[in-house]
Length: 226
Length: 226
DNA sequence: GTCTTTTGACTGACCGTTCAGTCATATACC
DNA sequence: GGTATATGACTGAACGGTCAGTCAAAAGAC
Image (cartoon, rainbow over all chains, first blue to last red):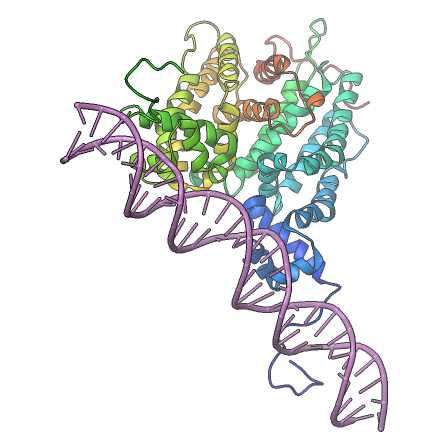
């Protein structure tokens, strides 16, 4: 509605040069998540951003560069955030529990499943972006989880293992289960694991795999688990 | 320069109507593995089969139907085979060890990594084929592994868990590690896990996660509340 | 020669990219 | 305030490359 202006119709568009890049990046994130890199159509990104195809090229030089910018401005920070927010005190087991819960929560968000798919499936086609992603995201993320494992081993809570290998076990479980519980899971709906149980099952599996063996000389009573 | 005597040159092609379908299916398997469904080009399949593009259409009505036939005739049997060949005697732990080793061996073969990628990440675009794959391959395969788990639980070798959830843990570990050790892994070469260690690490991780606690004493060792 | 099999140029659709033109807004001038 | 002019954000038709699928003609088999 135009209060000051008495024009007969709403303008077909408004000048919003400051907001355009963000609108386009948001639209691109959702379309890339949904369809992957190659299958994402600029027409659809434009439509979701509420602009026309040509407008995208006023702000980004190409589809590939638009993709890079989405990674830098949207995805990178989101993943970095998923790795933060872990209490640094408490037992290694508690830390690991809260790490798993936080990861599961972050990866359950809207675009995560599609983006994981994209990274696993298509990112290798863009080697420099894959390298960027590896260094900036994966290495950092692995170090955080690795530190939890190492601390647990040092304190005797966890049995001695190769921390790097253990990190990969845990990530494999999380990532695969995100794919399997997401909207494009291969299983018919009625056969999918209930998302509520999955976190508990992963946590249980991981902790049993890592906990130090009981010391035989000191029998004790009571089970840590029901 | 020495042709026997009669013909002036070798024929450019021979009529091989019986062998054509197999040649095309083999070529299609390798190209689909390498590039995925959408990015696979019929020209490339034709070239690898040693025929021209038009010939494919003499034997298969469309790219999608060709893909279906590859699944039915090549991939399905291969995966079924990977699930067989497990000794049915011995302890559950031995069975699980040999199951993991056999899977790892089968999935290390040439086209496996590409197909896993394709199935996990792209198959959902073809819902009826995804349903076919689920029923014919996944359910069957999960039952075999599930039986090993159930037997181990029944015999007391493994702690009680939800067998279905456990099957998914194990499959998640195997599948993800196949992707991570394959040629299109996201990690720079020097950071990839050595394939030789991966099987041992997975086996170790899984067995520790599943083994029943020692029966006489479940100790509260370590100092969780330090 | 006839019949079967194969070829590869062709078609049409699709999509990233371009650019000449449109029009909402800002500024200059009264 | 109102009107003229300038700006540049935005549009969408058009272009060029790619690729699944077609078909008339060529090449083998007999």
